[in-house]
Image (cartoon, rainbow, N blue to C red; front, side, top):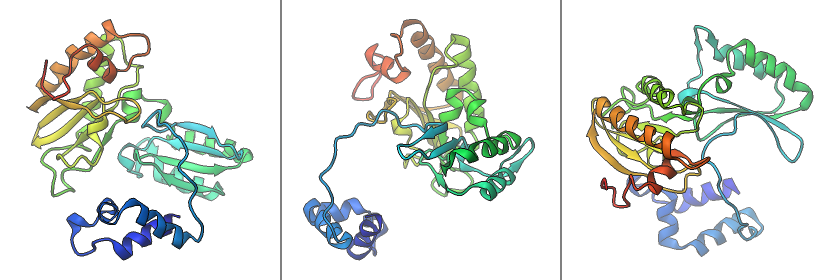
Length: 283
Protein backbone atom coordinates (compact mmCIF):
# COMPACT_ATOMS: atom_id res chain seq x y z
CA UNK A 1 0.00 0.00 0.00
CA UNK A 2 2.80 2.40 0.87
CA UNK A 3 4.50 1.66 -2.45
CA UNK A 4 1.23 2.26 -4.30
CA UNK A 5 0.77 5.66 -2.63
CA UNK A 6 4.36 6.73 -3.32
CA UNK A 7 4.38 5.61 -6.95
CA UNK A 8 1.02 7.26 -7.61
CA UNK A 9 2.47 10.56 -6.44
CA UNK A 10 5.64 9.90 -8.41
CA UNK A 11 3.69 9.40 -11.62
CA UNK A 12 1.00 12.07 -11.22
CA UNK A 13 2.43 14.65 -8.86
CA UNK A 14 3.98 17.94 -10.01
CA UNK A 15 7.69 17.12 -10.06
CA UNK A 16 8.61 20.38 -11.81
CA UNK A 17 7.59 22.78 -9.03
CA UNK A 18 8.82 22.14 -5.50
CA UNK A 19 6.13 24.40 -4.01
CA UNK A 20 3.43 22.35 -5.75
CA UNK A 21 4.96 18.90 -5.34
CA UNK A 22 3.02 17.56 -2.36
CA UNK A 23 0.52 14.73 -2.43
CA UNK A 24 -2.20 17.00 -1.04
CA UNK A 25 -2.12 19.04 -4.27
CA UNK A 26 -2.43 15.92 -6.42
CA UNK A 27 -5.48 14.79 -4.42
CA UNK A 28 -7.01 18.29 -4.45
CA UNK A 29 -6.77 18.51 -8.23
CA UNK A 30 -7.72 14.94 -9.20
CA UNK A 31 -10.10 14.11 -6.37
CA UNK A 32 -10.03 11.63 -3.52
CA UNK A 33 -12.10 9.03 -5.40
CA UNK A 34 -9.58 9.05 -8.26
CA UNK A 35 -6.68 8.72 -5.82
CA UNK A 36 -8.23 5.79 -3.94
CA UNK A 37 -9.04 4.10 -7.23
CA UNK A 38 -5.49 4.47 -8.50
CA UNK A 39 -4.03 3.12 -5.25
CA UNK A 40 -6.47 0.19 -5.35
CA UNK A 41 -5.44 -0.56 -8.93
CA UNK A 42 -1.77 -0.65 -8.00
CA UNK A 43 -2.34 -2.69 -4.85
CA UNK A 44 -4.43 -5.20 -6.81
CA UNK A 45 -7.24 -5.30 -4.25
CA UNK A 46 -9.60 -2.68 -2.86
CA UNK A 47 -8.73 -1.02 0.43
CA UNK A 48 -11.18 -1.65 3.25
CA UNK A 49 -13.44 1.22 4.34
CA UNK A 50 -11.93 3.53 6.98
CA UNK A 51 -12.26 2.27 10.55
CA UNK A 52 -13.09 4.55 13.48
CA UNK A 53 -10.05 5.78 15.39
CA UNK A 54 -9.13 8.37 17.99
CA UNK A 55 -5.76 9.91 18.81
CA UNK A 56 -5.24 10.19 22.57
CA UNK A 57 -1.66 11.44 22.60
CA UNK A 58 0.89 12.98 20.26
CA UNK A 59 3.84 11.63 22.23
CA UNK A 60 5.78 8.38 22.24
CA UNK A 61 5.19 5.56 24.73
CA UNK A 62 8.60 5.06 26.31
CA UNK A 63 9.96 1.85 27.76
CA UNK A 64 8.72 -1.63 26.92
CA UNK A 65 5.33 -2.23 25.30
CA UNK A 66 3.91 -5.49 23.98
CA UNK A 67 1.72 -5.74 20.88
CA UNK A 68 -1.15 -8.10 20.15
CA UNK A 69 1.21 -10.57 18.45
CA UNK A 70 3.31 -10.92 21.59
CA UNK A 71 6.32 -8.97 20.27
CA UNK A 72 8.02 -6.42 22.50
CA UNK A 73 9.03 -2.87 21.54
CA UNK A 74 11.38 -0.60 23.48
CA UNK A 75 11.19 3.15 22.80
CA UNK A 76 14.22 5.21 23.83
CA UNK A 77 14.51 8.99 24.22
CA UNK A 78 17.01 10.41 21.71
CA UNK A 79 17.00 14.25 21.93
CA UNK A 80 16.89 15.71 18.42
CA UNK A 81 17.53 12.19 17.09
CA UNK A 82 21.28 12.70 17.54
CA UNK A 83 23.02 9.34 18.02
CA UNK A 84 26.66 9.78 18.99
CA UNK A 85 29.17 8.76 21.65
CA UNK A 86 29.49 11.46 24.34
CA UNK A 87 30.98 11.51 27.82
CA UNK A 88 28.88 9.25 29.99
CA UNK A 89 26.53 8.45 27.11
CA UNK A 90 28.13 6.20 24.46
CA UNK A 91 24.88 5.82 22.55
CA UNK A 92 26.35 4.99 19.16
CA UNK A 93 28.44 2.20 20.66
CA UNK A 94 25.46 0.99 22.67
CA UNK A 95 23.12 0.83 19.70
CA UNK A 96 25.78 -0.94 17.65
CA UNK A 97 25.99 -3.51 20.45
CA UNK A 98 22.19 -3.88 20.54
CA UNK A 99 22.18 -4.35 16.76
CA UNK A 100 24.37 -7.39 17.26
CA UNK A 101 21.84 -8.89 19.67
CA UNK A 102 18.63 -7.78 18.01
CA UNK A 103 16.62 -9.90 15.56
CA UNK A 104 13.93 -7.30 14.84
CA UNK A 105 14.00 -3.72 13.57
CA UNK A 106 15.05 -0.22 14.55
CA UNK A 107 12.34 2.38 13.92
CA UNK A 108 12.72 6.15 14.11
CA UNK A 109 9.64 7.87 15.52
CA UNK A 110 8.02 11.13 14.43
CA UNK A 111 9.16 12.62 17.75
CA UNK A 112 12.89 12.14 17.04
CA UNK A 113 13.15 9.02 19.22
CA UNK A 114 14.08 5.40 18.50
CA UNK A 115 12.16 2.15 18.94
CA UNK A 116 13.92 -1.20 19.19
CA UNK A 117 11.03 -3.10 17.65
CA UNK A 118 10.01 -6.72 17.28
CA UNK A 119 11.95 -8.06 20.27
CA UNK A 120 11.41 -11.64 21.42
CA UNK A 121 10.70 -12.00 25.12
CA UNK A 122 13.88 -13.98 25.74
CA UNK A 123 16.01 -11.13 24.31
CA UNK A 124 14.70 -8.40 26.59
CA UNK A 125 17.17 -8.95 29.44
CA UNK A 126 20.23 -8.64 27.19
CA UNK A 127 18.87 -5.48 25.56
CA UNK A 128 18.00 -4.00 28.96
CA UNK A 129 21.55 -4.63 30.13
CA UNK A 130 22.98 -2.90 27.04
CA UNK A 131 20.64 0.07 27.47
CA UNK A 132 21.70 0.55 31.10
CA UNK A 133 25.40 0.08 30.39
CA UNK A 134 25.43 2.74 27.68
CA UNK A 135 23.16 5.33 29.28
CA UNK A 136 20.34 4.83 26.79
CA UNK A 137 17.69 4.89 29.53
CA UNK A 138 17.35 8.69 29.38
CA UNK A 139 13.56 8.47 29.18
CA UNK A 140 13.49 7.10 32.75
CA UNK A 141 15.85 9.75 34.16
CA UNK A 142 14.44 13.07 32.95
CA UNK A 143 11.30 15.10 33.61
CA UNK A 144 8.24 14.70 31.37
CA UNK A 145 9.04 18.13 29.88
CA UNK A 146 12.58 17.11 28.85
CA UNK A 147 11.42 13.68 27.70
CA UNK A 148 8.88 15.09 25.22
CA UNK A 149 10.46 18.39 24.10
CA UNK A 150 11.18 18.84 20.39
CA UNK A 151 13.18 21.26 18.25
CA UNK A 152 14.11 21.59 14.60
CA UNK A 153 17.79 21.77 13.60
CA UNK A 154 17.66 25.55 12.89
CA UNK A 155 21.02 27.35 13.07
CA UNK A 156 23.61 26.67 11.74
CA UNK A 157 22.25 23.88 9.54
CA UNK A 158 19.06 25.32 8.07
CA UNK A 159 19.25 28.37 5.77
CA UNK A 160 15.67 29.35 6.67
CA UNK A 161 16.32 29.62 10.41
CA UNK A 162 16.08 33.06 12.01
CA UNK A 163 16.72 31.89 15.59
CA UNK A 164 18.23 28.96 17.47
CA UNK A 165 16.19 25.84 18.18
CA UNK A 166 18.02 22.52 18.64
CA UNK A 167 21.06 24.09 20.28
CA UNK A 168 18.85 26.31 22.48
CA UNK A 169 16.39 23.62 23.59
CA UNK A 170 18.50 22.11 26.44
CA UNK A 171 18.99 25.51 28.12
CA UNK A 172 15.37 26.50 27.59
CA UNK A 173 14.17 23.19 29.00
CA UNK A 174 16.24 23.67 32.15
CA UNK A 175 14.80 27.15 32.68
CA UNK A 176 11.22 26.01 32.21
CA UNK A 177 11.89 23.06 34.52
CA UNK A 178 13.05 25.56 37.16
CA UNK A 179 9.72 27.37 36.83
CA UNK A 180 7.86 24.08 37.14
CA UNK A 181 9.83 23.23 40.27
CA UNK A 182 9.00 26.62 41.78
CA UNK A 183 5.31 25.90 41.38
CA UNK A 184 5.41 22.19 42.25
CA UNK A 185 4.47 20.79 38.84
CA UNK A 186 7.78 19.23 37.75
CA UNK A 187 6.26 15.77 37.32
CA UNK A 188 3.31 16.96 35.21
CA UNK A 189 3.42 16.32 31.44
CA UNK A 190 3.95 19.51 29.44
CA UNK A 191 4.75 19.76 25.72
CA UNK A 192 7.45 22.26 24.66
CA UNK A 193 8.58 22.74 21.05
CA UNK A 194 10.92 25.22 19.39
CA UNK A 195 11.56 26.05 15.75
CA UNK A 196 13.88 28.56 14.17
CA UNK A 197 11.34 29.88 11.66
CA UNK A 198 7.57 29.85 10.97
CA UNK A 199 7.77 26.71 8.79
CA UNK A 200 7.41 24.78 12.05
CA UNK A 201 9.38 21.60 11.37
CA UNK A 202 9.13 20.56 15.05
CA UNK A 203 5.34 21.11 14.96
CA UNK A 204 5.34 23.99 17.50
CA UNK A 205 1.77 24.95 16.61
CA UNK A 206 0.47 21.77 18.31
CA UNK A 207 2.43 22.27 21.53
CA UNK A 208 1.14 23.54 24.84
CA UNK A 209 4.18 25.86 24.73
CA UNK A 210 5.59 26.63 21.28
CA UNK A 211 8.39 29.02 20.36
CA UNK A 212 8.67 30.13 16.74
CA UNK A 213 11.84 31.99 15.76
CA UNK A 214 11.58 35.59 14.54
CA UNK A 215 15.16 36.86 14.93
CA UNK A 216 18.28 35.89 16.91
CA UNK A 217 17.12 35.44 20.49
CA UNK A 218 13.50 36.40 19.76
CA UNK A 219 10.44 34.18 19.30
CA UNK A 220 6.70 34.21 18.98
CA UNK A 221 5.31 32.52 22.09
CA UNK A 222 2.43 30.20 21.14
CA UNK A 223 0.25 28.67 23.85
CA UNK A 224 -2.70 26.32 24.17
CA UNK A 225 -2.15 23.08 22.22
CA UNK A 226 -3.54 19.86 23.68
CA UNK A 227 -2.17 16.47 24.64
CA UNK A 228 -3.50 14.57 21.63
CA UNK A 229 -2.48 17.00 18.88
CA UNK A 230 -6.04 17.91 17.95
CA UNK A 231 -5.96 21.63 18.76
CA UNK A 232 -3.74 24.41 17.43
CA UNK A 233 -2.24 26.89 19.84
CA UNK A 234 -2.48 30.68 19.46
CA UNK A 235 -0.10 33.63 19.63
CA UNK A 236 0.40 34.93 23.18
CA UNK A 237 3.53 37.11 22.87
CA UNK A 238 5.04 38.34 19.61
CA UNK A 239 8.77 38.82 18.98
CA UNK A 240 9.63 38.23 22.65
CA UNK A 241 13.05 37.59 24.15
CA UNK A 242 13.82 34.92 26.73
CA UNK A 243 13.21 37.20 29.71
CA UNK A 244 9.73 38.11 28.47
CA UNK A 245 8.91 34.49 27.63
CA UNK A 246 9.99 33.13 31.01
CA UNK A 247 8.16 35.88 32.88
CA UNK A 248 4.93 35.07 31.02
CA UNK A 249 5.34 31.33 31.62
CA UNK A 250 6.18 31.85 35.30
CA UNK A 251 2.89 33.64 35.92
CA UNK A 252 0.81 31.18 33.90
CA UNK A 253 2.41 28.07 35.38
CA UNK A 254 1.76 29.47 38.84
CA UNK A 255 -1.91 30.04 38.02
CA UNK A 256 -2.17 26.52 36.57
CA UNK A 257 -0.57 24.93 39.61
CA UNK A 258 -2.98 26.75 41.91
CA UNK A 259 -6.26 26.67 40.00
CA UNK A 260 -6.22 23.59 37.73
CA UNK A 261 -8.82 20.86 37.88
CA UNK A 262 -7.64 17.32 38.75
CA UNK A 263 -5.62 15.95 35.83
CA UNK A 264 -6.06 19.13 33.77
CA UNK A 265 -3.23 19.78 31.31
CA UNK A 266 -1.62 23.21 31.01
CA UNK A 267 -2.99 23.87 27.52
CA UNK A 268 -6.51 22.91 28.54
CA UNK A 269 -6.33 25.12 31.63
CA UNK A 270 -5.28 28.15 29.58
CA UNK A 271 -8.43 27.90 27.47
CA UNK A 272 -10.81 27.09 30.31
CA UNK A 273 -9.52 29.93 32.46
CA UNK A 274 -9.86 32.49 29.68
CA UNK A 275 -6.12 33.19 29.43
CA UNK A 276 -6.32 32.67 25.65
CA UNK A 277 -8.63 33.97 22.95
CA UNK A 278 -9.52 32.15 19.74
CA UNK A 279 -8.28 35.04 17.58
CA UNK A 280 -4.85 34.82 19.18
CA UNK A 281 -5.10 38.14 21.01
CA UNK A 282 -4.63 38.33 24.76
CA UNK A 283 -7.95 38.72 26.61
